[in-house]
Each structure stands twice: as C-alpha cells, then as structure tokens.
Image (tube, rainbow, N blue to C red; front, top):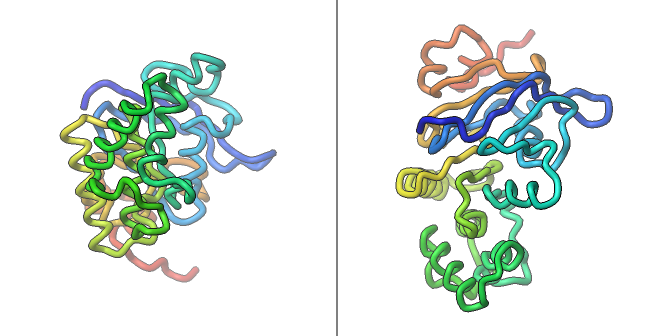
Length: 252
C-alpha cells in the first residue's frame, strides 16, 4: 500500500433530480482492501456503479490510476475499463456457458489471444480461486459460493490491478463466506490486487478490510472513515457505534 490508485473528488450521485450522495471525497490506496459499508438504502451499490462508469455522476470526478473515468471516451475509456474487474451480487455468470467459457469472455473481448491461450489463462484463473476441475460445469451445477469464486476468476481474467466486488458474501452461509474472505486476503497479499468491496457483513468486514468508509442516507455522504476496529471502539458518532457493535436503534 502507498500511492492512491483511485481518487474520488466532489462526487455527487443521483437519479433524475434526486440526489442520493453528495460531495464525496476519498482515495483508495494501491494494494488496499477498501470496504464501502452502511445500512440498507444508503447508496453503497450506487456509489460502486458510478465508480466503474456505469452511470455518469451529477458532479465530481473519479480517477483510476490517474485516468479520468467520468470523461474518458473511446479507446481511453476502454483502457480504463480493462484495468479493473467487477463482480456483481448475483455473480452474473452466463447460465448457458461453462465456467471456462465464462472466464474466457473478457479475453475474447479485449485481447487477440488464440483460443488455446485464452483457455489456458482461464484454467489458471479458475485454479487460483479453487475451482480447478470445474471448468466444464455450468453455473447451475455450482453452489452459491462456487459461483462467487467463478465470478472473481472471470473478473481477474485480464490481470486487473483493481477488483470491485458488490456484496460478495450475500446469500452465503458463514463457513462459505469465511472461505471467500480467505480468498480475498490471499489474492490481495499474493498478487497485490486492490479490492473495493461493497458490504454490510460485519464478520467479513472485520476479517478483510484495511479501511472502510461508512455511508449514511440522512447525511447523504460519508460519516466515518478508518479501520473497522478503530471505528467500533473509538467513533464518537452513535450511528457508527451502533453499526459496528450490532446495536439495535432506539425507537424515536
């Protein structure tokens, strides 16, 4: 960790005239496991979708490895898109394709590698996430945890510096979720991948996060930033303490 690999400045997000989050400012350091968290409806996934360029912001900027995500077009935009991988909450694997074919898709889109080379890369990525031997299976033949691992393998196909994961532990049992946490830590330490993860799963947040930001729908912004254990033990904001200590909110 060291230099910022993602820089978000003055970012205001919304749909139509409705502002969801306003004037967000934060950086993500290279090699960091960075978690965006908060209660339901606070805008976590909305922020991630704007960071990866799915939607244009109302105002502000997102720089990825020094390149302007918001305004880039054509070949410049494609170069930025190639620099990161994304997994979605559902996994978003193509059900009619095998795991090998799913992982080959980004290689077909962004490279000119021959088929044999694409398949060799895809097999290596599946092995890295613990799915060696499952190359010819369809997503429907896999457990939820295996589908999430396969989605990570596909996101890694182009050797990105950054992986964005949207609610990776959603719908998983505690043991499977812990295994996914271990995979994230292994990929972070062994390959130096920077992770930006949307999550509200406390056990996973404590297990993997170097640093977090907490969003709040009333504030429409960031109400806390730091290491999760520090925020749990030392935050002066009652909303932050309630979240990290799993305390029920008092009725008003």
